[in-house]
Image 1 (tube, helix red, strand yellow):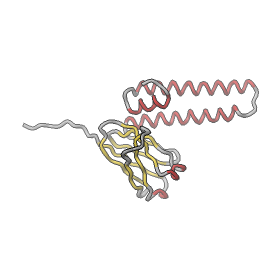
Image 2: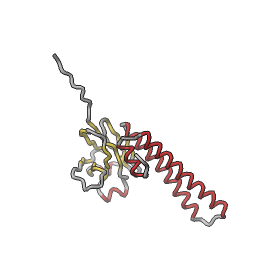
Image 3: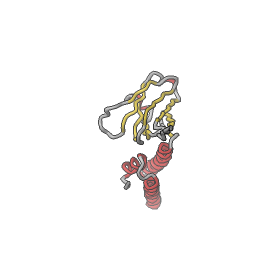
Length: 178
């Protein structure tokens, strides 16, 4: 009699890249997002513009990938969902991740948020210019529309991702309900 184990693969691989070789020899850190002084910090050294983190992921967890303080001026910190599978990461002035279901969703949400923030910043700068009352009113209407559209998008995102690490994160970030 043979007993077969149906345990699924719970391993993760995070393969990261840089555009520039100037980061070769530097360290990349993977730490918990919970805000508590991390007990466990994983680190790897960059070689040939790349790095790899591997491990077990019994449950999906939000973590942050970052570099030492001075390099954070050039390299955007990156949130990733550590979950089973192959995760790709690109560290740059605007960093990105994907490859697994929750990381693909988080990246899509981040892109919508960045576009919304960019538009809001543009509208803010426009509102600081001396404009007539009608133009000021239109700027204000657009500001409110962008805010409302992003809130609606985020609430729908939270609902579609209820019970997941990425759903909880977006809920916490936006004040939505999970």
